[in-house]
Figure 1 (cartoon, rainbow, N blue to C red):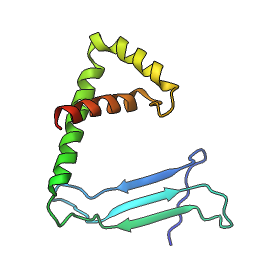
Figure 2 (figure 1 turned 90 degrees about the vertical axis):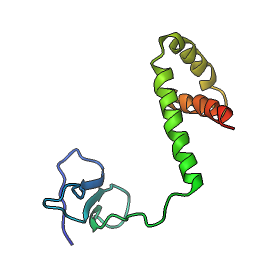
Figure 3 (figure 1 turned 180 degrees about the vertical axis):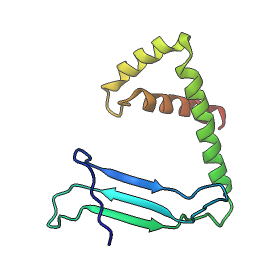
Figure 4 (figure 1 turned 45 degrees about the vertical axis):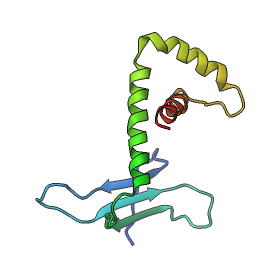
Length: 126
């Protein structure tokens, strides 16, 4: 097994170090993944490197998956528009702060935008 040594100060690494290239030249079909975790274990070996082949989808998207993707695209566009609309920013911030301390309140502005715009999307496309 390969040994990976990270510089001091790096507490966690997780993800792809090298992905397959999309162009035809020097294409590799594999992906290099690395993880580095510090956890209380009996083993001091907390580094891992994996070489794996990306999985390609074989089945077509279902109708439900198309609906979910379209909803995501629509809500994300609504959030981008609403978060840059100067006429709504002040009232949105006040409403967000008012609900933040309530039970089940959204703790971040982005989550609040997703909740509000998602409800608007669902109501318009019900």
